[in-house]
Amino acid sequence: MAKTLVLFYSRPGANYVSGNIVNLKKGNCLVVAEKIAALTGADMFQVEPLKDYSADYTRCTEEAQEELRAGARPAYKGDIDISLYDTIIVGYPIWWGTFPMPLWTFLENHDFSGKKIVPFSTHEGSGLGSSVSDLKKICVGATVTAGIAIKGSRANNCDTEIKKIVANI
Image (cartoon, rainbow, N blue to C red; front, side, top):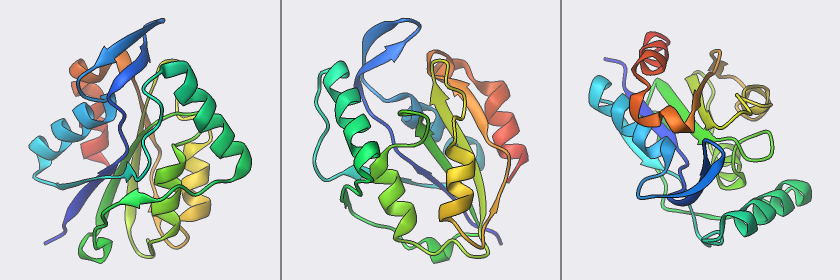
C-alpha cells in the first residue's frame, strides 16, 4: 500500500494576510497540511528552522531575503525517513518567489528519486512563484506534479484546492 507524507514549512505569528499583518496561532501551511492529513490519513512532518526567524514580520521578510540572496542553507530540527513514502505532498509559503530556505535545505539533504511530489503553496498574491521549477531542480528523479496555489487568507476554507491536491496523489 502506498504511503503518503505531508512535508511542510509553516510560520505562525505575524503574517501578511489580505493586505494586513495579522497574528496567526497556526501558520497557513500547517492549517492546510492538517486538513490534507485528516482527509487522506497521511503522515505529517514539519520542517522547523533550528534558529527562529524574527517575530517581527518585516524583519522576518528581510532575513528570508538575505538567506535567499546568500544561497543560505539554514539547519532544521529533527528529520524523517522519506524512503518510507511513495508520495510526498510538499507545502510551503512563498517567500521571495520560492519556498523558505530551511525547506530548501531539507530537500537537498534527501533523495527523492522515484517519489511523486505534489506541491502546494500559500501566498497572498505570488501564486507558486518559481517553487515548482525549483522542486524539479532539487528533487532529481522525482515526478513533480503541477502545484496548487492557495491564498493564505483562504487556508481555513480551501476545500476546493485540497480536493485538487488529493486528486494528484
